[in-house]
Amino acid sequence: MKPLPENDTCDLAIVGAGAAGLMAGIWAGRSGRHGRILVLESARKPGAKILVAGGGRCNVTHETVDEGAFAGSTSPAIRKVLRRFDVPRTIAFFREMGVELKREETGKLFPTTDSARTVLEALLKTAADAGAVVMHPRRVESVARNGDGFVISGAPGAWGSISAGRVILATGGMSLPKSGSDGHGYAIARGLGHTTTPQLFPGLVPLTLEAGSFVRSLSGLSAPGTLEVRTASGARMTSFTGAILCTHFGLSGPAVLDISRYFIDAQREDPGAHLVVNWLPGETTESVDTMLRDAGRRSAGGILRGRLPERLARALCQEAGVDPAAAPGSLPRERRRALAGSIAAMPLPVTGNRGFTYAEVTAGGVPLSELHLDTMESRRCPGLHLCGEICDVDGRIGGFNFQWAWASGYVAGTEAGNA
Image (cartoon, rainbow, N blue to C red):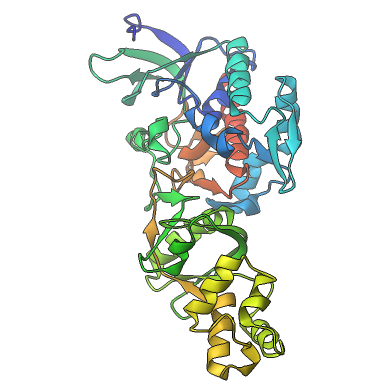
């Protein structure tokens, strides 16, 4: 790693070369008043999260994105930023770079190549064409005010320091730390006068279950289901319906990842908050009980195998203490109701989550209330802009967090470049 020349300067320094940082570099360069732009990336190679997103295919965005798909800061604040660079504009932007997107049945948009590398290479080339120079590995240890500008420094003896007129923090959060987003960006932001939310915790993260849970014995099984977060008193707080994947440690899959941040957050306020699964979305304990009661001579296992994977049907019968070969109509009411409850309203013995190492996003961050939303410039430190996951904004699975990166990176880059 070559040290930078002594007293080196740039007009704009962007800390982080992920989705938001590269987007900021592109639009700062296209602003026409950009001067010298450096994008400093701590990892050995830029865009690590882009490459692993969507199973290596990169779920660029979703066909329908609005503020309702996000948590964290207020909906009006999130909406204001998203509207600056919406989904149609995102599709056109990628097409302009030579990346055509295709819609899948779920509404997710992927590159037609099914390769995340297509996305990353297009962003890097477009950033270079716009005049943004990506430097890596260049881990930034500190950013300090220096008159009207900033001094950005690496670790002692690493690569040196550089003076910049403006800075964009696009460091990411704490999720997938091996990609370079280890949470240090929050410390930099706090050092420049910002706060972060009281809690920073994993979002879009798999959940762990008690070792004795029968769900863990179903590892590899995937089935549709509805998950609900309920308070200690049983009040329903939020729910998600989608695929649920049983694993050797507990649960994963789209519905689990989507509800994880709400469940973790609920437990912080209410330790008795719990998660309930309905393996037959749209049904209730009462409707399932009626179905079982009116089944005639058909066996419980036979009835359930018509609507559930066989392994799951058998396990649910066993959990309720029901012989799969028994006709449910002949069962005692309490036993039949127990089976109906296991199917439509089964509490899950969640013990925790798999942490930031396996999380796709960070819940929490710098509140949007501390930024001018038309520029993403700090209200507390003029000349500093923030974008991407470092902000207190986290979305559902399905391309929503990338759309936040494109939109917030566009606003920060355009406005910093025009300043």
